[in-house]
Image (cartoon, rainbow, N blue to C red; front, side, top):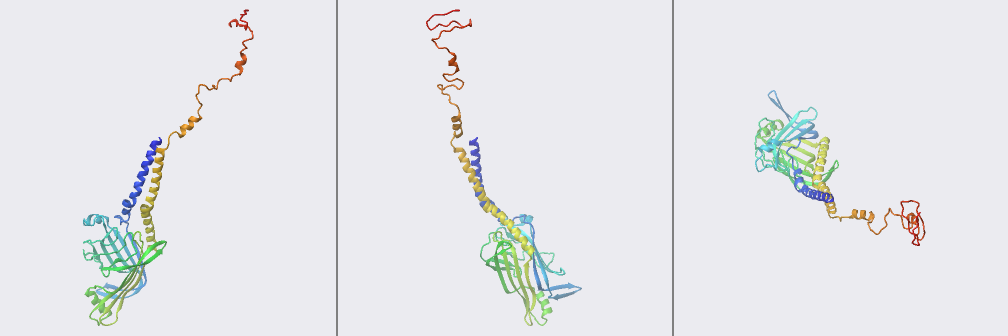
Length: 385
């Protein structure tokens, strides 16, 4: 029984040690990738007292104004597992996922839509950077028909890599249609989670704006101008979870200005967007949950399995190699001896009652019992009755 139990414990110990060694090398990499079945997420940012361009078309006329109000920006990310399976080229299969992303900016007071965009792109599952996919597209007009391949995404867009480092990253800007460095500026705790803070500065960059749009804006804000351009600035600050690369907090200080060749410039956008508290709280809870899963598989799981494996291994070896007879020797020591020279326990000792019943040989006696033969007396005579 001990041999079987020891062998079983030994085998269990070996299995646990193999499991502990395999967790960080084979299982952990699977949880440090964007999953195919990721749940849709929505992030909400608010800009208080923002100035923005408002174009209203109706009754054959177009109204252009720059009002001031609170703005609410919602970005919805919807992963596409079926498209990921069917539409990605062979070189990206297994390494990338397809996401659809929708953004809507509304006024906070009357819910009027100020701007919208939608896009479809592929992201690498580990780095979170844009993958070179020919079918990616970006629609900023709100039209139903979507041009394919009209944008070339690159760099980080909606998340950072798993295991984000304390270094600079290239982050894609949708207005410029290119990447701009985001500098690592330090660490900061947000609701108990330590984050890496990155800052991207864009200053006075001319936007590639259609000529018809420029003429319309000049006609409204600078009638005497013959040409002009829209200049764009943005200070984008990203608070990133270094373990998962997820955004916990985002701030964008956006500024757009129409600069005509003659006349004064006109502010078209001046807004300071910040994730609202509900979005930050949900991001923190998601990060904590994912951190726990990654830590359990990458760190605590191997440690616990390794310790239990060593204990089972040592216990199994001890049971198999333990000297036999510890209990049997004690049992034999307690058992009665079988020495033939020893006195039986059911005998009376010498000099006991049996010896007292035997008369001395020198004493004459006779028996009254006729069945008992006469005994010889000490003088050799036989006395008969």
